[in-house]
Amino acid sequence: MIVGTTPRFRQIILEVSKPLSLLFIWDVAVTAFHFYMPIKEPPLPTALFGTALALFLGFRTNAAYARWWEARTLWGALINASRSITRLTLTYSKTPNGPNLAFRESVITRQMAFAHSMRCQLRGQNPRGDISRLAGEDIADAAMQRRNPANVILESISGLYADALAAGRIDTIQQGVAERVLIDIANAQGGMERIKNTPLPNGFQFFPNLFSRLFCLLLPIALVETLGIATPIGSTLISLVFLAILSIGDDLTDPFANSVHDIPLTAMSTTIEIDLSQALGRPGPEPLKPDRGILW
Image 1: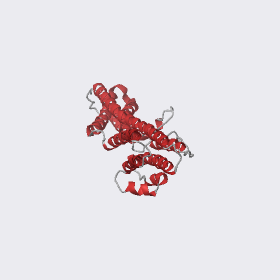
Image 2: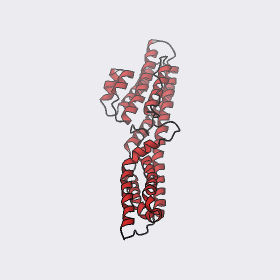
Image 3: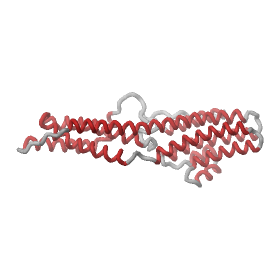
């Protein structure tokens, strides 16, 4: 995620540079045709077309941003639920005996592993290293045997609470409260997977690209009579606005694609690890810092 308030015009230009360069060549060709050929261009209703296209792109960008913001909200819910399950675990295992210490250690380290596993799964990466580092090789082996490692870890946390209930270390009310927090975690996980696995409808991808490029092709034909030799500059600047809006919508469509515009999953999963490690009395890792204005 890009952080800071400085506009990153270079980033925008790089993303649209190729189509913008082709459009500039087209603008020059249209301008040359206008001055050196006896045939004149027909008047085109580009103002009406541009207004309709701007409304369409605005609606599409809002829909894409809604996905991005929902993804951020779900990760916020996961952070809060991770802190909640940690607090409950520490409260239920206050008596400093061996089973209680093992119980709190197992639950909290597996919750840290769950957060990192979700990050890796959403980005299409292998979570084994983080699971093994935090929860041990046995949990990593069990998790990697199934398609959804994070779900395996969540099931194991629920199993730890069931074992504590069977051993009489917690009662049914305490187990029920913890299970409701685990349900909140599962709901957040399901929401993230829904966003990742359900792209915007094809019409939201195909038609904005088609109409934007068609408008940019027609624009110099409509402007050349008015702007004359300055048509390539004026048309390219207007095209830049529409292509930038189009690119913003594309960038926001998949908030888990591990690009500079995405949700900072690494920073948020590290935040969970820091908070939960310190709850266990351990020094947590350092908070992730932005790298050249980008927080990953």
